Image (tube, rainbow, N blue to C red; front, side, top):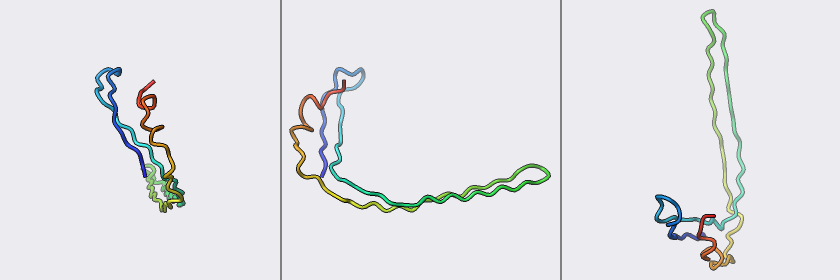
Length: 81
């Protein structure tokens, strides 16, 4: 579940409207990053190579459905300070 909305932003130069997104989902991510690098020295200089990658898995741990839409959509939360 998430909240989105738009509001007028006439107080900001060159901006007529702005949009926001509030994510209400809790997640947990586990993963591994792997970096392999090689370096070879030659008479003419150095040659190097790099290989990088990652493996990730994201779990949704909770969906917060009890958030108050009036808080997120209230006028004071729609303005840039």
